Image (cartoon, rainbow, N blue to C red; front, side, top):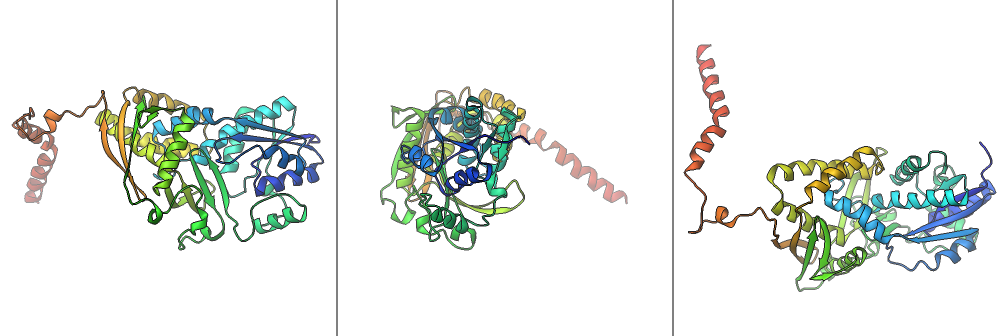
Length: 405
């Protein structure tokens, strides 16, 4: 392999990537350039350049991709109803292909031979980074230091950083691994690795516990246009601000905590904690609007699509032809998914309290039991007769066959 002169590192400023930055310089004697995507991490990123350069980066890129993240990644997944194993809104999984896009673009502009990421050898992110990179530029060398270095644990990483004066905030006393963006927070490691234990209070970042949430119910109204949320409580907001506000409101009311044991792509089960107030609220609201506006066959079939879509995203196949083809199907189903949903939030509960749409398929005169009823109940006798004919025929013939034995 030719000598690597330049490496572009996906850099968050956390423990792993801070240690990786210096390790790459020592290992490859190469120039290391960092790339950081602003995905709505909820923290200031103006420290990134100083921190990266203090650790040895020769150049630092920080790119605000919040709108692109919402429009091109989050909202397609929302329209698809994509929840991995029916619960995880895919916050980290959706961010990885966008980060990799920026990583590859930076490497091409800088003439770098390699890109690097901080994913472990038993996680999902390594697959997401590397499959996306190979789809975008198969000639780039991909480095994954955590898979090959001599540091065998996060505790060793902390000690490595402290010994070399690398500025990191994580300590051995609070060894959580966090990944945060607009769509949610992923939390693992430390005491969370025991699935019997309830998550400690200090594991959570953006949500109140249900016990500490306000005693008063909060109502919010979300308006959708073709499956995309455009207004919150009657006010039009840019996508990232709408999501941020829902995170704030939902988090205050204890909504959005997810504690699950999930099946990782590499074949192990992992206990994961997520906080995703906006995602939980928007998925519930969007799903309810689809119930109102989609015909039964499309609504039922779309559930199968949602499961497959989530699986593809989770497994790092964002750029696969199938995922892109599913978008075409999903977009077709969203043509009439416009309307308003009223949601009630109370101490961790998220419940739809009202729905209306100009494209609603709900016909009150068919559903009512009042004098307005236009449903022909007499027609049901013939319908049931035809619908049950196969069962009736089967039962009759089996009875005859038994009698002939």
